[in-house]
Length: 148
Image (cartoon, rainbow, N blue to C red):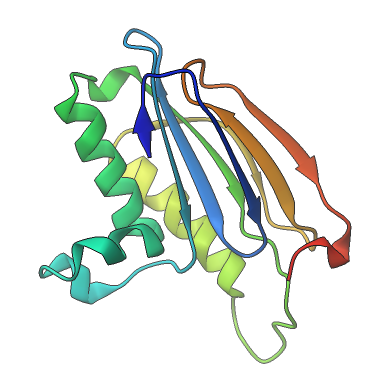
């Protein structure tokens, strides 16, 4: 979602990652809620409606939309949330939440977008409320059983 209108976007996060990006000059905000770190097929032209499901393509899609609306890359500020270890990750090197967090930070660094705040990892879910026209994000950590 990309908007300059006064709008509140609320989402619940477990292992998923939400990334907000804001441009103060244009008062233009964007948010995504992605479930999985990446899908290599999308780089070759996958389904457009699948972009939001994956951290890498969701962030790139938001950036494309922000730049198309006049934002300059150096003016963008990101905030990253989620990536909890909601499920038993024994036997795996990195949980899905950890992979999602790492991918979000890697893509933002690669795209030269400054990360102003992050609240990642842990075993508890999160509820965030994003103010699209101010860039503010309110965060509430949930009880461990709050998100499945």
